[in-house]
Amino acid sequence: MASLRCQAEQEPLLGHRTPGSREWDIIETEEHYKSRWRSIRILYLTMFLSSVGNIAVVRSYIAGATSLQERTSSMANTSACQALGFILGPVFQTCFALIGEKGVTWETIKLQINMYTAPVLLGAFLGVLNILLILTILREHRVDDSGRQYKNINFEEASTEEVQVPQGNVDHLGVVTTNVLFFTTLFVFAVFETNVTQLTMDMYAWTREQAVLYGGIMLAAFGVEAVIVFSGIKLLSEKIGERALLLGGLVVVWVGFFILLPWGNQFPKIQWEDLHNNSIPNTTFGEIIITLWRSPREDHGEEPTGCPAEQAWCLYTPMIHLAQFLTSAVLIGIGYASCHTMSYSLYSKILGPKPQGVYMGWLTASGSAARILGPVFISQVYTSWGPRWAFSLICGIVMLAIILLGVVYKRLIAFSVRHGRIQE
Image 1 (cartoon, helix red, strand yellow):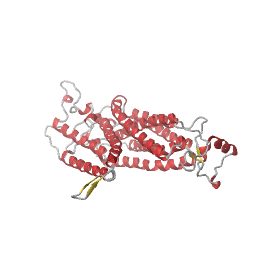
Image 2 (spheres, one colour):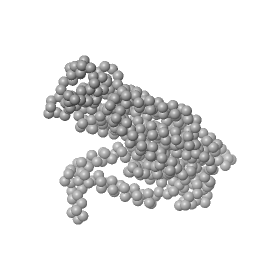
Image 3 (tube, rainbow, N blue to C red):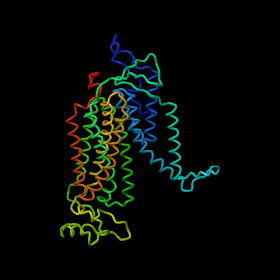
Image 4 (tube, helix red, strand yellow):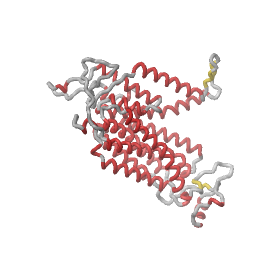
C-alpha cells in the first residue's frame, strides 16, 4: 500500500507560503496528520480485502477526512485498492487449486483444508485481521475543504485550529446529475462486461470453455488497466480538473462502443444444430443458401459453435473482427476507470464538508441499479436485435450523458468554491 502514497500525503497541509501571513501557519499538527492518514490507509486495505457492502461508508469517511487538494488522489487510491482485490482474489483461488481435493486434515478439530475450504478460510482470516486493524488504528477525523480539522470526540489537540461546519445549501442539481452520470458509467460497463462471453461465442465460434477462459483473462487485464489508469489519473486531475477528465472519459467510452459496431461484409459462422423446422427465422431464401454455403455443419459429437440461427440477425449482421473488439475493450476500460473515479470524487466535493453518508448511499444505490439493469438490457436487446442495435443504443445513452454534462458543466464545482470560501 505504500506505493499508493502521493505527494499530497507526504507532509501536513500548509497555507500559502507568504512570509508574515497567517496562511503560512500549519493548519494541522503532525500528530493529527499521521493519525488521519493511518486511518485512511486502513480503509484502503479494507477496500482491498472486502469492498462489498462497505463502499459507501469508506467513500463517506474519506470525503470527510481529506481536503479538496487530497480528495481526488485518495478516491483514486480507493478504486485502485478495490481493483487490486478483484484481480488478486481469483489468482489466490487458482493457486489454492494446487492443494487438491484431498488436501490435509487437522484431526484435532476435524478441519479439512483443501482447494474448496482454503479460500474461505483465508477470506475469514483476512476479515478478522481487517476488523482488528479498524478497532485498533482507525480514528474519526474530519477536516474542511482547506484541511483544517473539525472538533471530534476521539482526537484532541489543543494547538490545532478548529473550525465550525460551514452553512450553505448543497447544489441538488449537481448531486442528481452526478448520480445520473455514475449510473450511466456503470450501466454501460455492466453491458460490456456481461456481453463479453456471448459476443465472442457468436462472433468467433468459440466454445463455452474458450469464451469463459479468454473472457476471464480479458477481465483480469481490465483490472490491471484500471490500476494503471487510477495511478495516472491523480496527476492528470491536478492539471485539467475532474470535470474535464469525466467528460474525456465519457467521450472515450463513446468511441469504444462506436468502434464495436459491426461493419464490413464478412459474416459470422452460423450454428445450425439447434435449428428446427418451426423456428426458421424470417429471412430470404438467398440469404439461407449463401449462409449454408459459407458455414458447413459441425460434427454431431462436438459442441455446436457459432452464432445461433434462432437469432435472425446472425444471417445479415457483419462480423465484429477480433482486433476491432480488443481495441474497443481497451478504450472502454480506460474511459470507465476515468469516469468511475472522477464521478464520485466530484460528487464528494459538490456535497461539501457536511456528513455524506446518506448521499454516498444514494450514489452506491444508483451504481447497484446500473449493474442490475445493464445485464437485463443487453440480454433482451442483443438477443432480439443483435449487436448493431444494442451498441448503437449504448452510443446514444453515452451521448446523452455527454450532453447532460456539458449543460451543467459550470454547476459541477466544489461546495466551498460555490459559496466563495476558496478559489477554484
